[in-house]
Image (cartoon, rainbow, N blue to C red):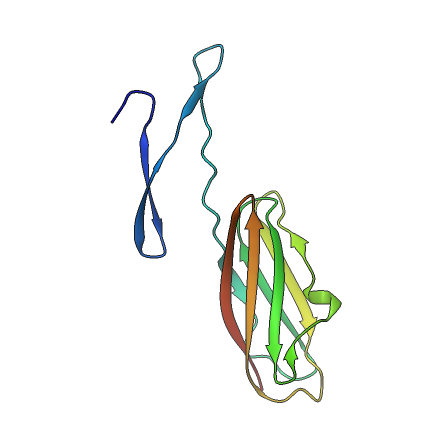
Length: 132
């Protein structure tokens, strides 16, 4: 390893990635890393199963200020409802959505995906919920 270029190992989807990160020093000699933290989208909670006429809620943890969008695939196709629109993660990286399940909704298992982006990175969390 060359001086001034430390190597950092990051686990990414079961693979090992070696990243070189440069360090800039301030006037006091303090180190200020320039590496961008890896983007993650981790499930916090998902209400499932749910009854017709109730609500589904999903909460995820990501990096602060990540831009996230929810997609829900029903029998009729991908939902275009306004509740699924883009949201920005808060200062702690939390973001959540809640939406109504219609009284006439077909019971079954329905797929959803939360996609978040920060800088050049993008990650998607896939899950499903059950309507009874």
